[in-house]
Image (cartoon, rainbow, N blue to C red; front, side):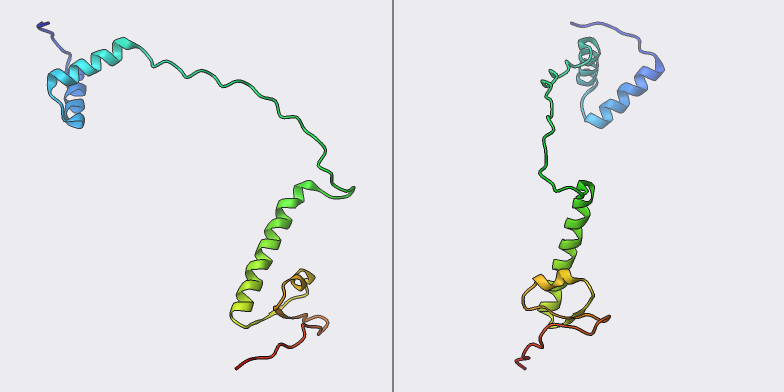
Amino acid sequence: MRTTVTLDKDVEQLLRAAMHRSRRSFKETLNVAVRLALAGPPARAARPTRFVVRAGPMGLRAGIDPSGLNKMADDLEADAVIAASAIEHDAVVHTSDTDFLRFPGLRWLNPLTGAGSRPLQNPR
């Protein structure tokens, strides 16, 4: 259909900016804009079905604070990184943290008591 339409200045500016952004002709840009405006808002996706999370016992002993479990996991991960780095570089870890006893091959020294791992033979 051919017709003559008079556009307000602000509408013309919006249309020309859209033409520039999309690199389309005046006719294409105008048709897209009119279709979008007349079609209304896009249909919303169907809402997902509701679900209920049922809490259950965690099986923790009395006195264990479950909110501290993540901190404990972070601490153990940091210990593992330190131990791996010390083993790789043939270094001695100076610590009073007894968690490091669980890493075989790690050389450690407790600076408070002077206790430490059995000295390892240095192959060099």
